[in-house]
Length: 116
Image 1 (cartoon, rainbow, N blue to C red):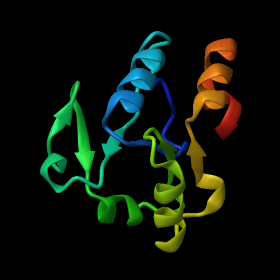
Image 2: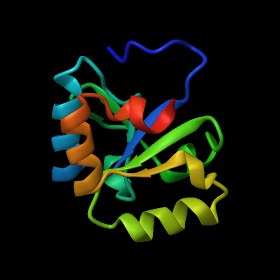
Image 3: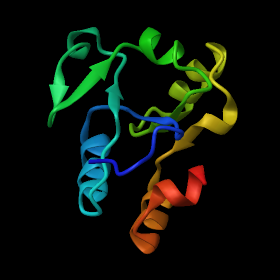
């Protein structure tokens, strides 16, 4: 569904709640989806949301440098700090806040704006 080639980064939505699901719906409108979700809630690890597997934070840390993490929750400052403390490169972290969501709506393609 993502329409990406194998040279591009793995896309992860960090946050499985309302924000993550809203942005997922926006991406689906242009036939895109993240490769994974991630959440700090242990009960969600290994489950699927709309067919997309939820990873643990440790699994995401293992992808450092190979993944783009879209913070899709209201705890974006805490999650960004958590990712940076575990070695995720700053340029791999995208805060999907209201500004990013509006850019996405205007452009029709948030992925192109941030990862090209």
